[in-house]
Image (cartoon, rainbow over all chains, first blue to last red; front, side, top):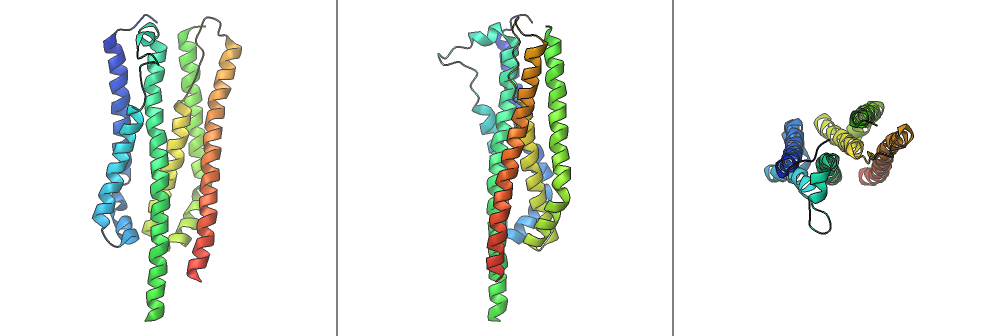
Length: 131
Length: 119
């Protein structure tokens, strides 16, 4: 491959960001039918939980992609101009890191919602015992 | 070796990794469904938890499938390419193993906790 210019690197960088953002939005759309589930799990403030959950997914996808630095330790990007392969690998790394952040975040929400659900089951059972 | 050889090897390994991840999801699908229906005591909530766990496994698997460190220098040959491909696969297996172990520990703790709360 021939050497690349700054604009090529910028295209790879912004494509990585765009793809990461789109994957976050696709996950939100995939989980769009969860309003009812969140309402049942949280009982109170379900709209707040829902909006925080969805916005955190989009934010995590962006943070993951943005945390990949295209500059080396000295703050230069010359090595990318010489090697298009490394530029493409950096772009792929952006998407991969974004998915890593999403995995950790969804794991956190998964745990939080399960604990909330078990607590609400316990509360319901306690109430029925009192009655 | 030509650049296209590396790209082909990378893409084929990526597709294999994605297929392996989806196969794993399909394998544990039935068990997860029963577990969540039992734990959440509601079909809508169980479906939500299932969707979340699918996403966790799928994103973890694809994230590992994307990471690669193929050596494309002039000294690269079919043997180094084979090692790069196996490294790529190893990355996926390590990630899936980690996710499954963490999920199993979480399910185990939740199962114990759930028993206590029901009592």
